[in-house]
Image (cartoon, rainbow, N blue to C red; front, side, top):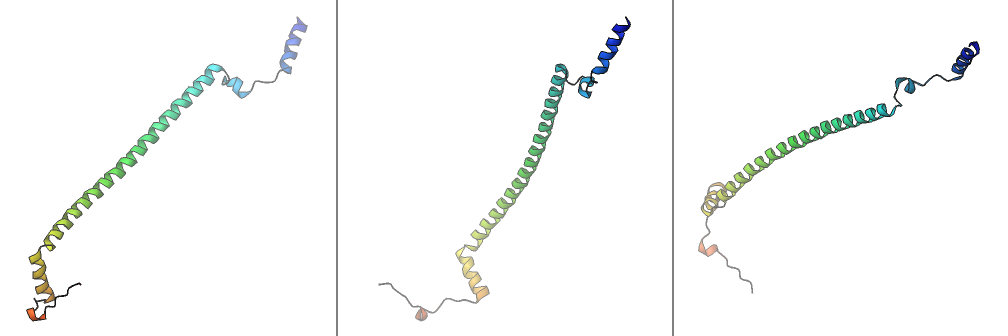
Length: 116
């Protein structure tokens, strides 16, 4: 009996202590599977957060561009109105007389040029 105890004590002293992974049970297949599953869940959640953030940034940029498009539409409409206002023949003649002091030339001062 004494030799049996001694052999057990001797056997234990020859064994190396378990590593921290063995002691914690991390190397067991069920623990590794659970760790992998938790890692996949964490990765999935972070990708959802990242995608949501990108969508919000893109939506804000879209709203800014829509506002710019509306402003450009308003400006385009104002330019069309201005063009139609200045394009009226009577208005051009009136502005030429009033602002530039232009007048219709006498018939004797008119020269007709022809291309032959």
